[in-house]
Length: 437
Ligand code: GDP
Ligand code: GDP
Image 1 (cartoon, rainbow, N blue to C red):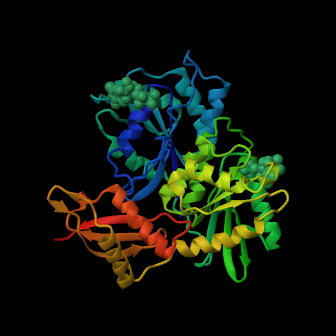
Image 2: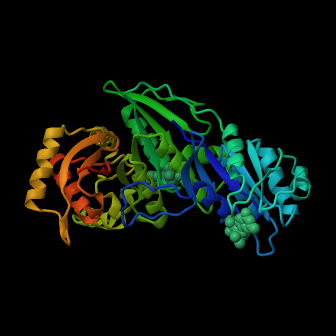
């Protein structure tokens, strides 16, 4: 199911970031903490009244020093709105209506996207004086809020989620493997997709309307169903370039949300960039299976050690994704393109593999006997019992005497033990600790 995306827009200093943090704040991050995952606070999944959505902070929109909206800024605002399912438009009730607010409102109205207007910095609510002039924006009734103090933000969110489009169910056959092809612009996403579809000589059907902006190619191979979610075609269609690449990231996330397996495409010539790390980090955190596809391999001068060296480099750059298999492709020559789907099958299987409980407990017992947990003063961690609580990704529940005694490094050790026995290639592994005495 696709999560709707909500973009927070507005002039600088109206309180967008404050509101963003207020809405997503206090939310517990994913249990697993991995060093090296590049994270920025641009977007965050959140939930209100049972509706999940992804909130995007456009706080970084580069308005001019003078504060005036120029062509570049207008395009960025358009892009942000273009990517969103709904808009949270923030104005500053203390500063009052500003000509730039009118410009932003015009863009929102033209987009026809559902929008909520937040009149921020209202700590003492006096309806007329605080919000009256914002009716001129031609949007719905302004909602007075104080992001700083958290006043009335509940009402704002009620309004917002009521505007979100209904969740779209996708009616692919249940065994369908959904593949998200993600990566920076120009790394070869579309070329890879076309090459895969070409090799398979499949019957491709574009299924429009599953989500507003996705281009899905569904096909069958050896009786198995696949859907490739191509994020690149969307950019072509929208014909808006995104020099900052900021919004291409958002598009990638949406594809990841809907997928089982992620093909993370890396440009062999450019190597792993910071943007790549960010995109891969999201795939990792989302718990999807991942394959690292180093594309444009034909463009490198190679000797017999190039591939090994390249592998080492990628492993170092994407340390948090050691589990992801690497494949070196050329969409142009077709090299190894036919192996990509085999890898997809493989990691999809690993992603949903289950260890039976006795085997898991035996494995952990042996590991703990061989390498006991480090003791802390007088107390030592005891693992009493373990079970696999879920798949996609595999999640292990460890019942322990005191969860506080577990160290990240010991958890990593246990993960390695599980991986060396069962593989789980291509998929992250999660742990949950439960206290039991
Ligand atoms: P952004 O540029 O739109 O992301 O704005 P920020 O969130 O960085 O906030 C700009 C300034 O407004 C900061 O000094 C905030 O402390 C202040 N601010 C944000 N929300 C409120 C609010 O609800 N009330 C008041 N009085 N100040 C606020
Ligand atoms: P996307 O933006 O990630 O979808 O990238 P495209 O598929 O549009 O490819 C961007 C450019 O790289 C195009 O000019 C492609 O022809 C080229 N390209 C894609 N894959 C390869 C490859 O494996 N080798 C070479 N030499 N060029 C490629």
